[in-house]
Length: 133
Image (cartoon, rainbow, N blue to C red; front, side, top):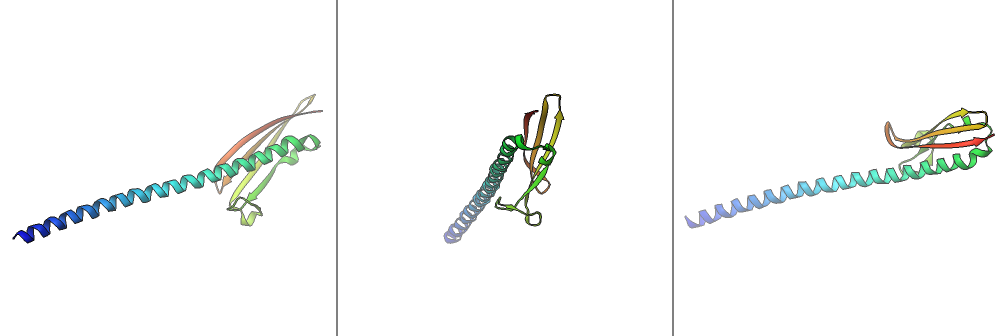
């Protein structure tokens, strides 16, 4: 009788320990998955910010020599590693849309730069520059 009681106690304790480790494993895996997703989002946000800043700098620097500012509307395509590519291999899209307000003394260029992952907006930025005549 004593051996049966000890065996049941051992098996009950063993099941409780296995249950505890199973719950711990689920929590740990969930944390790792969450951390991986946050890391990927941070990488995409950083790379989209770099791409937008590059375009914004070109608009501010090269815009002075452009006679037709409406030509600043364009789209850039990036692959999964954020290397510039063509439309067919693109995972990320950078859109630039400019609005020109003409005055008697010059032009005010408002450029909206947006980066998308498919249909999901990752990041956006507005660049404003005045071009005197």
